[in-house]
Image (cartoon, rainbow, N blue to C red):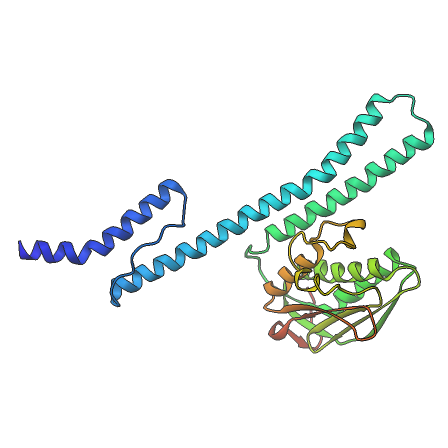
Length: 284
């Protein structure tokens, strides 16, 4: 009888953990916590269990916010597409110039929808485990610069030197991040503007001469779906810089935004230990 009582008292924390796990599996609600008890093995087990529940709760909350934000952002272009399609379908005798304008709007909206979906997919796969490869970051930047010169021919693209840099990581995702930074700088530069690009010591820097970041916006520019008041008049869904941050963190790096002393914005993507100077024998 004494042994049974001791055993029951000793195993009580385990039974509480088991009961909590069964309730969470049934309800799908990870907000519950278990008493951690004394500072012994079972107490540490309870603390670890609560830490796991807190991480799970945070992950589910992030997932819920992501789905809600994505649904909100997709609703606007879908509504606009539907409106223009209805007009084209119901108004058979539209003047040619008005019909052409509607078709141009449909093309623009479909392009924005494609970019938005691409951004959502990039963010959704941010935590996916993909095999890393060595690649030349300087070559990725050079290719993106050629694309930027075609996309923004009115902007002067200048390089202060692209140091040969080897990165161990994900070349397709890095290409997307580099392009997002160049595209963002190009959009804010305007006709006759200039953008300086550099790559040195594993740090990729893009500096434009546009209006720069408003002080109230700067801490938020890397958040998903965040768009400043000025940016709402331009195409985009507020995902470009958020993707840059996701890619930087996937490579163990960081990204920072600031205003230049003489005007314009500066964004730096630092890869820390993931990059090293040199040229790989075979670049992926």
